[in-house]
Image (cartoon, rainbow, N blue to C red):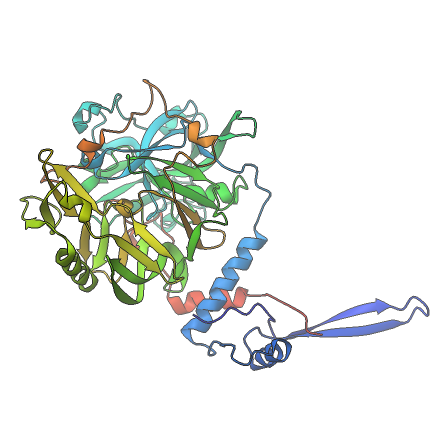
Length: 535
């Protein structure tokens, strides 16, 4: 990547009129402004720094345009900074996240309250999409009965949203700038329709968009809990299909993506929090979500990367994938960080090399498990389980990310266990870091500075006050399932992974519409107005 040189900007001149105090005469002074990556700027940089080896982007190259786009986005974020009302916000029920393994499609959930009076929903957390939606005025929705989901710890039925029963609800009109399907409306005041298609087969949600209150909380320095009502836009999901009728996110999805309609975006735009959030999934299948959480100095980090000239998803660059002491070098490889994907995916070519190396190093007998989602499964003694080769990712910033547990284990007895490597292959050109590779870390999605931060965490050490917050008691959200039940290997009843992955933008109202990359770059260049006077 080209070195970032924070100097100089557009060719222009500006003039300053100065009144001479002694004689009252007017003097005219001027300062010349030059383009930040012009030959003149380069010469000035060399003369000032003495560094003749500075790397300069070739004019109109992809690196040149991407660098200008990134600088433009950073400046716009700096100019839009508001005084934030709260350091951290979290759902009013508490910051805890929940995990039910195979019973609810290997996704992580949290309880939220919407509307006035408030109604509770257990929504899946999805960093790979933007829209918050809940079942609403249902035509075709998943069952709401807790007993349907085979989950004895789900101690209450799920909810259905009815906008007409909320005093603070109002339809989003077709004329609203966030209504992407407004051209399909008969009139500007009609309710805005939406449809979001997800990557799992035939999985979608559709209905109309509503504005209502999301109930949140914060904790002061004196451990006093403050209640906050934030205006958000949500989908009234009247028709669900595919995996959403088969146990995945039966009570809705909270999109955490970079789109303008996502909850983190709306909270930041309202000036309630910094433009960032964190999720933490611990290895006991619980965790935390915090809005406004920021990367701190001791965390490792790596930048988000643009795709097709824009920052629309949480892509990161990987240089190596390591199994034990073996490291496979990756060239210009990107991976999407997505809590809404159940397991981790690699493109076929990379996948085959990694599983071959794992199979070579593992000291266990490979077996075929009928109906298993995973290809590489083994039977091992308790002693052999302790010699499984480690796995780690190396990001482009030379930062190491250890995978705490890449396996699913199903114990036959005290002496032997079956386990599977939870990697899957995809025909896409990029990989997906799913929720299973996120466990054991506090991951900060720093949207303000376009970077991902991480540090090892048990999810109880996050800002002490928040760590003590609990979900609802008997009349609220459930406790996690026992670990032994959650770690069982998926069978034929398992919902396919990647159920909450963002779809292509031409079929999703909740995702900004795609425009040609060259056009996006040109627009950003026109908007780029960094200036620095040269003496």
